[in-house]
Length: 515
Image 1 (cartoon, rainbow, N blue to C red):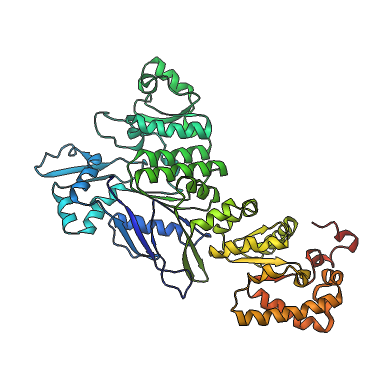
Image 2: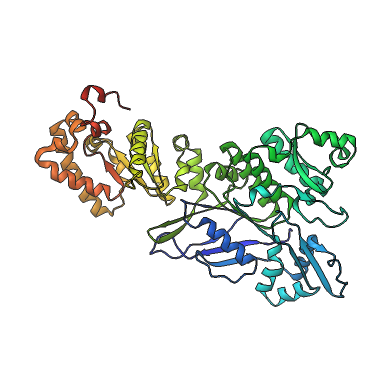
């Protein structure tokens, strides 16, 4: 059995709605925080890091954090052996005092070196002194990586006496063939290049990506002519693209250090979709194999899908903050798999809606493009809808197939139909988008039936061309009906169909060409 150290449970301040109880979740190996910008994802990671480091700070988003600790103090002693080191130069050896040092992953990272009594971990565990365990144990196994640090992970790092414990990430990688080969497997699959740590600079370790794997340990790690030629032929990673640097840095950091609580903010930054999916798969597998807690804040559906390939039972939490009100909702991975496996939902890229404030679903791609362009132009003077994704179904009948799963995942989703759909005999699927009790729904159905008769009297062609104006004396009642549907996020084009919005701008003979 592996020694346990992970985030066991999180309780948020907010719930799924203002009148709902706070969200409390059990955390599996992988937890992904999703939602629109400025929803609190990064702040959540910072609050977890502060707690794991033993800092007493006021939390804004998290009400409680529970950590699963090893079963006894001896297990903690065993885990901390990886960080055991000698007393700093100039300090004599003191009986009963142990020193610990964590290698730095970044050049400007604060050094983590401390001393404690040899019996401290056993005593703290026995007495349930959680604060001390957080400060001197959990902190050593916690890391947070964000946009400011991802490029520094594989920057050149100082060398030193290789008989001593490693003092930085590249030093640690240079000494561990197993970890180097794991990172090399990733770079080979992702870029067709081979990860190596070059020691030939003498004073620094440097990361290079070679066109071939080293023929031997000597060629990879020695300082002779053969090793220098091998390293000299391989480009230094800083000369390659941002996506290469950040992905290799993240994978090297997660695989290279024995962290148990790994917090990453937007790991997909600078990564194209295929690479984001590959990185997600590697990171999630590392967390699962290590029985660690990987908690990531992400805006990438591809990264999420990659994580699900390695860890299907991950936890997804959607955070929002709108109008001064926060929400936190746990999403069922089964629902996510439905979005991923349904060809219609997948082709519509419906998973992207998780990362926006809301979604607007149209019946065709031309409709989507039109409304999206109008919204973009209106946004120039702050009249548009902020942070909203526009999507399209195959036809109006398939709009509910996109709207329903998004709403179940907590994404406000609005459906847009042409006016004549109100008179369609296939209207039944739209009723499921209206959240009403049976009695209220029956009343709305009767109103719709009355307007349907008026539309049939006016004729479908006139309804498509004129919308509400085709109904004469029934226009006011139809306006009320459309208003009621709109309150449930079901919109009908009041002027008929999309092209009719433009009839004052474009002559009739050109309208048939729109879309």
